[in-house]
Length: 404
Image 1 (cartoon, rainbow, N blue to C red):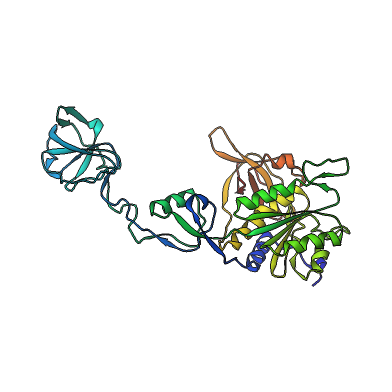
Image 2: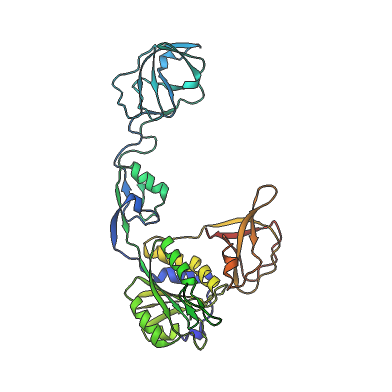
C-alpha cells in the first residue's frame, strides 16, 4: 500500500503497532546497585537473608517480660543494655528490664518495649507509669524471609527497589543492557545549538532534548548529527544508524517535496507501518523497520516531536529493555473551560495548579502552537481530549499524563 493511501491511525492503534513490532534485546550485564536506577531486572531474585533476622525494637526504651505487666507503677531493676548490632547473650527474667534502642535485638522473654519517656530512672531501677499502645517490637521476618522472591523480573528498578535489593544482601544485579538509540535531525535550515545562526537558520534544539529523554528512559543516545535535505545526505547518515538498536529521525516525516526521510529509507529496504497519526500536536509521525531495526520518524515541529516522544518513543525504549511501560493516566479538575475538540485526539500542554481549597487543578497553557518551546517549558502535564469531545467546563474532570 502506498504511504499516501494509509489512513491516520489513532494513538492507541499506533502504540500497539510499535509495541508489536519491536523485538526486545537479549543482552544483559551485571552491575552494582548504585548503577541500577531505571534499569530493567533480568532475573527474579530471592532474598539471601531474613529481615529482621531477630525480634528487634522499633523505639528507644526498655524491654520487659510478660510476667511483669501488672499494676502500675512498675518498679524493675535494669540489668544491662543492648545496642543496635549487639547479640543478646542472656534471656530476660521477671523483675528485670533491659535498656534497648531502635534496631536493638531483643532478648528471649521480651513481651514488649516500653518507651523511654514512660520510664523514670532511679539509680539502677526504672519506674514505669504506663505501657503505651504498641509493643514496639519488629518480629523476626516481619519484612521478609530468606528465600522469598521479592523482585520479580522484568521490573523497572527505582530507588525503593534498589534499597530492597540491598537489604536482601545483593551487591549487584543482572539487568538488560541499555539499548543504543541513534538520533538524526533533518533540514537545511538547521545548525547545531551554539553555532552561528542568521534569519534563515536556526538551532536544532529538539535533538539534545530527545537525547536527554532517551537517557532518562534507560537508553544510550547516539548522535548522528544533522542531515541535509538530500537523499544522499540522509542515506549516508541513516546507514550509520542501522548498526544500533533503534533509529529516531526528527523532521522530514511528512509528505512535502523536501520531506525526504521516507524516500531515503525506502532505498534502504524500509518497511513502512504508518506515517500519520490522528492526533495533535504530532500528526506526521512515521514508524517502520529497516533491516529489522525499528525507526521512529518524529515530526519537525519541536513541540510535536517532544510530545510524540513521550507517547511513542518512551514505550519503545522500555520495550527494547523487555519492559512493558504503560502510561499512568490520572483524573483531576480543570481550572477553566476548554472549547469543543476537533477531529483529532488532542494533547494539550498544561501545568498543575491549586485552588482555594488546596485541590490540584489542570491548567491549560494559552499558547498551544506546535513550535512554541517557551510554552512547552512551562508544561508538566498533557491534558487528553478525545476526538470531537464536547466543551469541558471548569471544575469538570479531565485525563492527564504527567511529564515530569
